[in-house]
Image 1: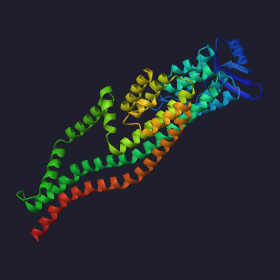
Image 2: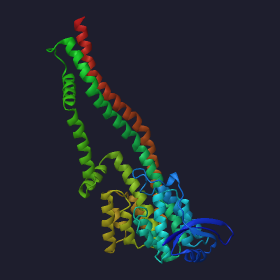
Image 3: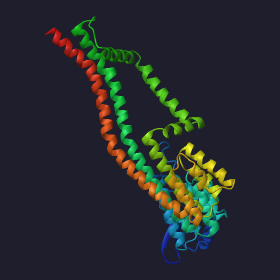
Image 4: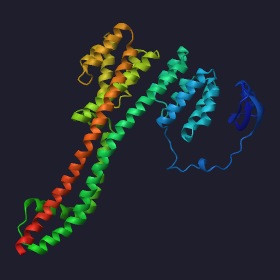
Length: 409
């Protein structure tokens, strides 16, 4: 296969340029004609130098950002709704994206669709860009002939989830930075400052000076850290690495997620985020024509917490046994009664997807309110914590100095 550059006019007379692969020039011309384009120039592809095309391994992105996916989904929905053929829409989207990794994926997807593969099957080959929820909804849209509507729902769902994710991240960044600063300050004081102050105390009071227990403890910790600085630093990195590795194991992830659900404020945020995500995702799949059991299995993987995921899978087994979904959810300790009650109303009226969208909207607003209130509380709490730690260290070393100075006077 040879790559060709082309310049062509569409049915409306608009000029378009791009690249395609074909066995020869005639095949490329016929391919363009099949897409409803009138070829003007078709010539072998020549790659010109472009600094943006330089690939540096550690700088080149190998992921698709949610922003890129939202733009792709919404623009593709608009083009298909306007009657543009899928292959031509995908070819246009290749030129629109600035993410090289995503562009390569779209090129492969376009080739697969041109060769006769369904859109959903071609997307399924690229799980790094398109998750199971995306693929299943596209598959349902193709089967029902409502691909443009499904794409609009997907874009809306991704925008909502992206917005919620950004708010949760922004709320967690500040305390994490302050905790990092606190630990750096602690190590700096213990390794560089406390030893100097310890020498001053010994010069003032002598080797036999009686010091408070807190001061002795601080000086002991400082001496140990200075004498074994490499061991302390290496041990700290090793502990962090082992904890991170353990959390990524199946058992460790479950235990970590279980622990998060026991921390009072964190539990509230995780539960509300999970309910909003479950409600919107499950409603989107149901409205797309996906079966209840399959929708529950797919939705469980999008929750982000293994404990809640298992509860949804257990509920799916009970639904498979003949129960309504609202029954097992009403017995859950994580799903509030309002969710099962609203779901029961939806099951009775046949409007489950509509009801769950309203539940998702409500809990997304709840998440916003909790994060806003939490953000206003975290700042003073962390400042007090940092100040208390520094003040404790200062008191433990400055108090004896002041006392010894008075004795000398």
